[in-house]
Length: 158
Image (tube, rainbow, N blue to C red):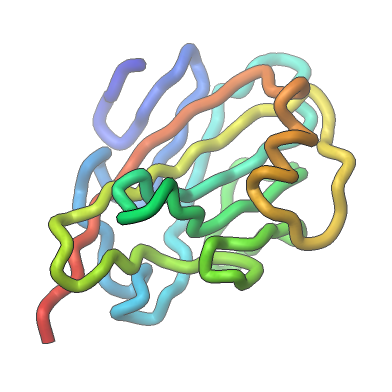
């Protein structure tokens, strides 16, 4: 994997989160301490034959297991934003459907929040809100490309 400016590359596939360089601190507006709105996420360079994308945002530094903040699937576009939200979204680990911004425990050190994009050779055969485990089971044999990047966040003491 190679990091170049805003991009994290895996082969030719890349993903970027708004105007953040990999490892930068995400703005409060995208977190539970702010408006909790998703950042603009763009990707490209998918392998030939890609028919759909899956997006996952997760925190590997959560106290118990990896914590899912957002999953979206069967995406046809190469961008999501507050104005262009995916129709097919799954459950985050807060038990809600859709985006849930970074929200580490207040006394924790900064957590990393990875955004992964998977290129699929065909859309997944699931519908409605699904968990990551169910989505992964449906997509694992369809993945033809993958890329990731990350931002960090630490809660401010109030």
